[in-house]
Length: 141
Image 1 (cartoon, helix red, strand yellow):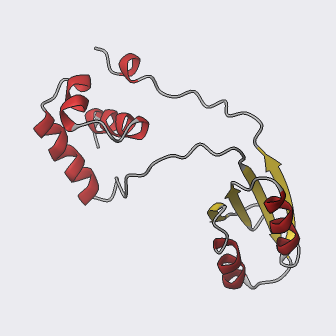
Image 2 (cartoon, one colour):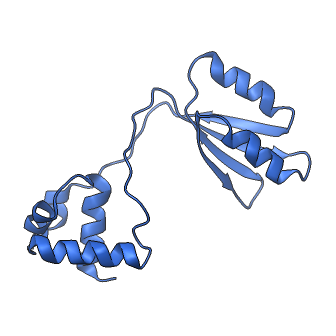
């Protein structure tokens, strides 16, 4: 992967709806050349999927400390909740890190069910301080 591929990936991560021609205009390539590079990045597994990002009213990071070794059963339990966006098996103190989007009383209901499986800690996002990459500033020569 070269500098141009990284530029294309950065642009796509900010707005995957841009056309190849629009991306090409930002990085001084033809739309066809951009399309060929994107196809190559998909074929080699660098780009695994395109997705949308939903703005949720609530986001939680839940660290899970298992009380048993029933990992597969726990994973099935956690993945059964639509509000659980990601289930990561992690190393360190916790066994899992869940990223969830529970609102209102649904978080309390989930925590009650979770407490039968494991100890946990919940961190709720109060503000997203991520600075988005500015495409125009990043790719000027």
